[in-house]
Image (cartoon, rainbow, N blue to C red; front, side):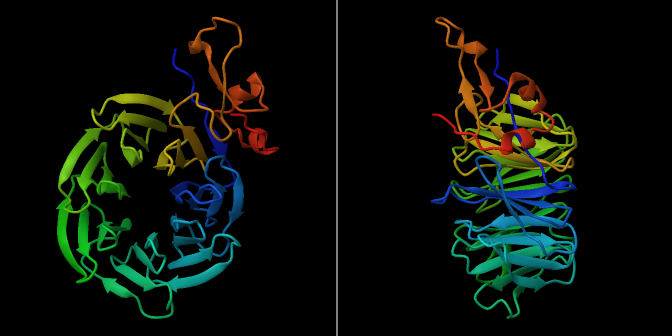
Amino acid sequence: MAMRQTPLTCSGHTRPVVDLAFSRITPYGYFVISACKDGKPMLRQGDTGDWIGTFLGHKGAVWGATLNKDATKAATAAADFSAKVWDAVSGDELITLAHKHIVKSVDFTEDNNYLLTAGQDKLLRIYDMNKPEAEPQVVSGHTSGIKKALWSSDEKQILSADDKTVRLWDRNTMTEVKAINVAMSVSSMEYVPEGEILVITYGRTIAFHSAETLEQIKSYDAPATINSASLHPEKECLVAGGEDFKLYKYDYNTGEELESYKGHFGPIHCVRFSPDGELYASGSEDGTLRLWQTTVGKTYGLWKCVIPEEEGAELAKARVGLPGTTDEELEDLGSENSDSIYSSTPEVKA
């Protein structure tokens, strides 16, 4: 009997969660930022979902959010025609970058010196974080609003996606290297530096391309329209979510469906693996962020594996519990569990 997946539900947003991003692993653990149409991006501890703070200052829906690698700075992209850079430790707003239309995407370079932005005005902008008041470098060429723009190949290149086109740009010459067209509107894009892989979703398709050449490596079709997909850091599996409220987990090498869960009470807009690959986060139209175990039953974060102590007890009867919760509370976790989990942070015993 398969063990039941028990997600951690992170409440607090009042509108759909449309983007999320993890930091790298830092001396203080790792962190996750969520972008929401309520205009109030939130920072949380990545392995537990514990709320750390909310970035206040945007006057419209926030469409994109990211953290720099050590989680000291955050950047957000919003419908108020601005991108903002924040101190992720204090929560203070550091820089506001005015745009001429809705901003959809933000991405820091590894050294934090530059910020890449993109949005509805069809332009890529590169801001120097040491001289934020200076005019940004601008790259034009997209024919519709840009949904995502990411640094790639040690920041020598830029990947960007508009409605049905994915483009690869040379950073130094600011010129287009290659463009590919896809059959349906691009719903998400993830860059995986290890192996230079680009994950693109459109319609029911999850496609994997070389980030250096845009040549397709492989693609899989899901049972429903997919809004987002993420590749495990070890490239063992991938997760995807979309319009049917479900999360799907596939074997990356074979495309076999390994698991599927009714994940939310609305379409899933974004999914991402944590930097250690132990969990993945999903954000939904239902306004929640949920954390899911990659390996169900493993003791990690707030999850504690409970094995019956009777001799000869079947391992199959093992269930995943959260410390300090009763069976009745566990039954309720699928809907709304944050109050019972976060009212007092339990000790997690290895």
